[in-house]
Length: 593
Image (cartoon, rainbow, N blue to C red; front, side, top):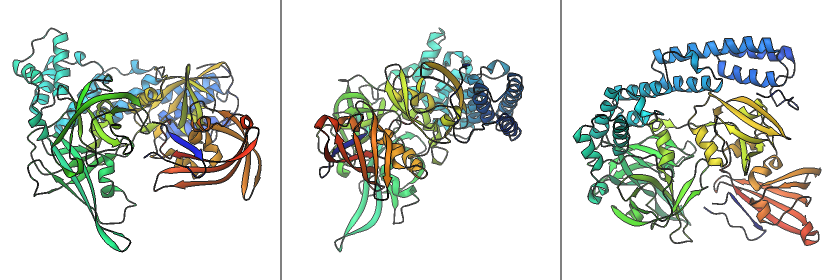
């Protein structure tokens, strides 16, 4: 889906380590040797070794730390990380331990960790969830082990039995495959469960209708029932189910001041509604985990499928218009659609109507391959689902109450054939502090060479805020590399940036054009366009480099989640005839890393 749209005024539609010298410091970064030494020493003393290592990398590259001093600081910070990791394991803080292990990987120091591997840490995380009787989070944590075949046979069998007991076909299939690869005997009951395909009637019993009663809405003096309706499906025998965040938003949105009550209606129970509560949610991926006090007769399990092939058969189960237990069939129309801030989506031609949101998208084997979340009302058969691949990666965090957090570097990127060009670097962001600037070409993130924005986002989704990741980039033909200390991603980077920056600073991200100011008056600002990004909104509107442009007005509509710029432009290609243009973009753009 296009990130933004731009049309002539009056017709606007918004659809729902290198030794190369670094040229100049980044904001909030030290510029003197003495300041650099003091800052790094303070960070390490304060227990912020990961941030300290990122600064060492930056200051070493800029020549603000002598090699001997940088090496001493490096050894001190790495030793602190190793000690922190050991403490985290002893305290069973395995998510912290996994983050620290990744940071040690980034500085090529994992050989100093003698008793832990990434696989053993994920096993520890899975065991800690199991001790809390949170078996679904446990199973999805064990699925994150890089190579299951490295686990001991008793651990594989233990998790195989757990997966069968909690009806998780995906994890059980992974365990059976790992045992088979080692030519070990697989218990007959495990193989039988994996090979048995669920019946449609069974799967329907694992779905539900989600109702949110928001009281009465007054419209022109007349009161109307205000309700949100969606679908959901059980993923845990203890009564946990998945739906869309937008269906239950009023339950957790602190800005919502009205009445809101959440209920779930089970199949074959049209006259009863069970109270429910929101456990965890992810606004960026539009996912929420609910809990009700029932024992579902069927539970679904997420797979690691990123996208099926176009043309493959799929089905959706949900409650269109409140008509519960409805099943519809269709095909995958397209994949890799850029529809959300993170990741990508599948386009499907399965009939989707209001009320289907939050229902499961299943393949011909009955596996959950996606979560239905949107349709375009004006176009029949144009609907979308979030691939299970993305949700499976953070599913355990949904159980930890509140909003799921994701990491970020703080740059917006544009896909080039040789890498990802930095369109915008947020001031004081992790990437900016590491030295990345607008125009840089990112060639590697965490050892991966992303060519697509979603690929880079996938790498970052596996990292915790606070952890280190190594980034390589090019600038004016010179190669650079450095460490980035990841931070927590804001829900709306654009809104955060607009608190401290001028609208024109965000033009590259919002509208795909870069400008230079020519003059500024109280009632208008004049610019000249210096760069147009092909395929972005400015390009599709016919704007070109060197076009003079006057910004007449810039507005942010938080209710519709859009930013609008009204400009006068003298297009060179049209003989410099002045034309009024209205540019629009969603606030939740999809190119931030």
